[in-house]
Length: 212
Image (cartoon, rainbow, N blue to C red; front, side, top):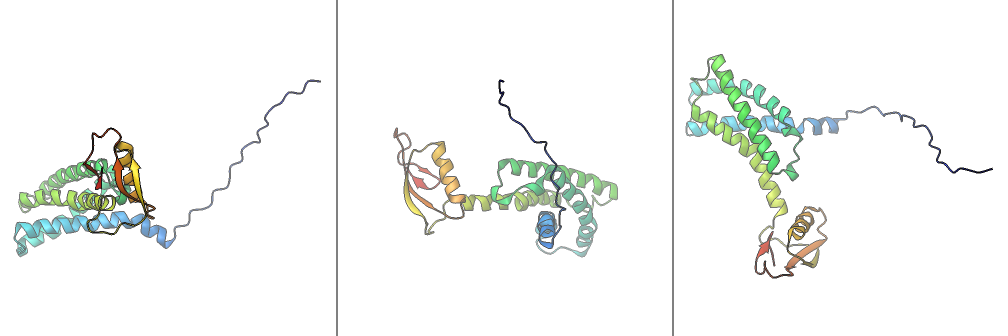
């Protein structure tokens, strides 16, 4: 008799899914981004009023601020959620995240103007306040993470670098990627002190603060 080799596959059984436990820390991490952006929206809008009136906002303008603030929050935060701004990771905030944020801020600002007009508050809100609020929203929610990431990945002047002193052979895109990942790592195992360019075209230049 001829034996035929075969593979016998056992039927897959659906493993029981453990119920999701919403602990206090999980709830805090879930609401951290919306709460932070809520704070930034309020601070940016208030700063726009203070800059418009030279930090001496009259009572009439302050009243319009408090009347229009709920409209701005109810429009901007859903726009952030729809665009995926809350899902952006600050330590890896990139150009695409910044463009997405700028689009969400622009759309929400236009909708805010429409809502102010319908509520009869647009003559009371100065146009300069709307413009400064638009710029401050992009800066606070996008510029600050971008600066934090740049400082985290780039060289810090007068800082003592830790790790093994290393010379990298190559000065192209892979070398730049290696420098970026080495500085992202929590444990700085490598301290790149120089790059060696094989063809000499990048000699005497610097890549992320490291001399070629």
